[in-house]
Image 1 (cartoon, chains in turn purple, yellow, red):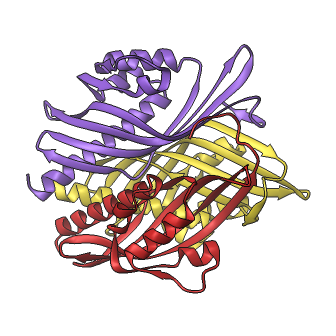
Image 2 (cartoon, helix red, strand yellow):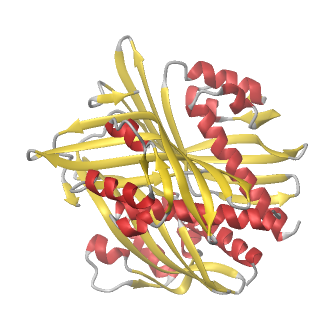
Image 3 (cartoon, each protein chain N blue to C red):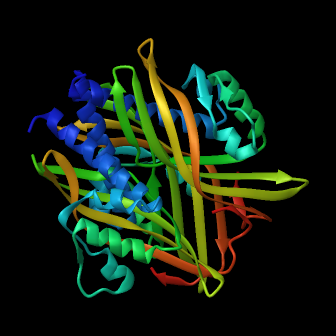
Length: 154
Length: 154
Length: 154
């Protein structure tokens, strides 16, 4: 690959990742599924909710996440990544992340605030870069209950 | 446009946006105005403070913001963007954002912590990319009063 | 330099910075030292812990930081940068930053949450971009004691 081809690949993967987290926070599950390959594998549910096996396939991952986040407000931010283009159709990426979730259980407000890194692989299929696998390593997760101070908008 | 021309445009818009948020947090209002076109339009004041109409023009937006943020400490962070170069002189961008404000009213500390997306358009004028419009969609805003815990520096 | 050479430089510096903050939060001190030139200078300890002089040299900076952060969980995030390539082998960068630290003193939990900008210079040596100097300007720092609410993981 030329330098320009690599730079174009990095920029496309960057935009793909941005679209993936925005789709999640806007609960656009069709858009979210569309960021992943048909056989994409995610191990994030294993660490988060104790699943025995990874969830496989963009649409299955989107359905699982839609169910898990129903009724929850979420903010996911990804920061300066390390993206490596390993061939014309494969790449890897490490993204520092921060997630904030707010929801209610039995009428009581709950929240989660976490930090870690997404470790991902990408594949270029039919001219488009897509996420082919994801694993989440955590640095720290805090959880709490009780009303957050004076929310003016949700 | 060639791939290289598009990549250069994306990088210039990325730096423009970084300069815009830094100018705001450092209260460099001349630098802030200089990031916008002479007829730039912002709808953010409508949602934030209930203005009936958008504010128009880089210098007018800077003056309005300077007045609104006087005496307030602010931190604005923008995260992985989706930038699309739509022609040699036009582009669009969606930026996840987080803002934190701290100020006093009647001797009492107040704070705001918000999350959302900036939706912007850009124009290239006389060889420089500038922000030509901005709208802010919010995911969540929390506000509170009371002393934040042991601030050691402001 | 051609446009492509500049874009490649910016992307390499971006990845270098991402690796530097990840190395710090994962306490990979060999990897951290490897991001800096042999005569790199950091002024961040001056403002943070009152050192009279900057610390010089990638390995010395790493050792100093390893000692300062021992037993502390840290999260450092860097946001949209302003990178300027000033020659084929020199560049500057301004990075908005946010840091969160958690630790214990005499059995009591402590935390720090800060905001500011890293001001850095870079040099390309033997084909690799490296950090050659760093200064940290702060917007705000909060500190507190007491148990953070229900940490489920550290």
